[in-house]
Amino acid sequence: MSGSTFDFRRGTGSVRDNRTAALARTWWLLVLRGLAAMIFGVIALLNPGLALSSLVFVYGIYALVDGSFTVAAAIRAATHHGSWAMLLLEGVSGIAIGAAALILPAVFIGVAVYVLAAWAIVTGVLLLATAFRLHAGRGGWLAGLGGVLSIVWGVLLLANPFAGAVVLTIWLAAYALIFGVTMIAFGMRLRRKHAV
Image 1 (cartoon, rainbow, N blue to C red):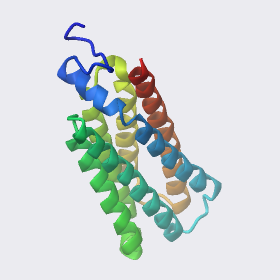
Image 2 (cartoon, rainbow, N blue to C red):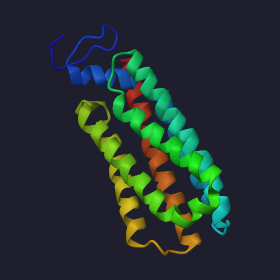
Image 3 (cartoon, rainbow, N blue to C red):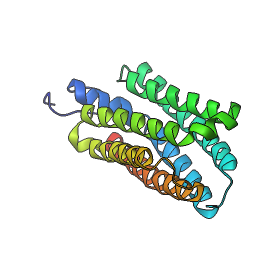
Image 4 (cartoon, helix red, strand yellow):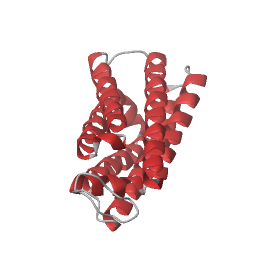
């Protein structure tokens, strides 16, 4: 095969293709991450009047699950000599924010909008960095779309920090649903490419 294409079965190709192949091996973690986001989004949409403390608890669980899946993907990428540092940073930040929400809910409520905005922007930047490292035909645009959505949502939160709890819940639910669909599509696309 030429140096510009990758044979998933033989493990040959360019550095960018090797990174794509390493990520493709963890396609199912991306799908699980997307499902977790969608479950959280549905719960938040079905109960937009949740007290903010309940929303913080549900969000804390989601961030821990999402961060754990991302750390697992980083570990798998590292064992296959793939690009893992960005995934690990994203996963650890998710776990830290989730733990803070569960351990210090009163403090978290006071700064929830700013923490959620910062987390979304950091996640978005890291997803965009991942997208630029992926081969264009391997679904990198989906990772980029997830990154852009995260950044836009974070900026909207910073622009409207005093939005009501119900509005915040609906925004968060919509973001989680769109992000979840994007991650599932990204994972399934990688799975199809990896199976070729």
